Image (cartoon, rainbow, N blue to C red; front, side):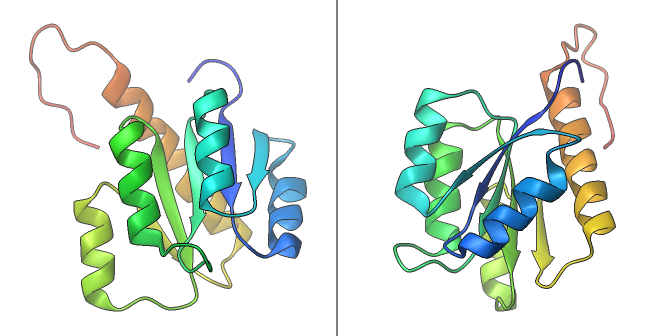
Length: 137
């Protein structure tokens, strides 16, 4: 992927937003949003490669937020972060296009590896495929 990937971190806990912004800033261009409405405003104003999305926020749950993001910006990868989610909710999130679910608290190395996989997946999906060759991810 050329250039620095742009990541939007969406959570209602300011401490986690700041921690992730600080932790990821050397690798990526990181912006933060406190809640879904702020995230949607940011996405309408700026180009973003990936969203790290808290699953449980006061104004919306992760599935409804994911649905809204993927409806408006289908090519953005979304990684959901949660402390708990029932299996049926996780299945629905994947059906809607979530790239991954990370359970809180998560290991930073695992987070970075998951982000890198999502960005590779995005780059592959954006690469022209003139011969119709099937790619595996």
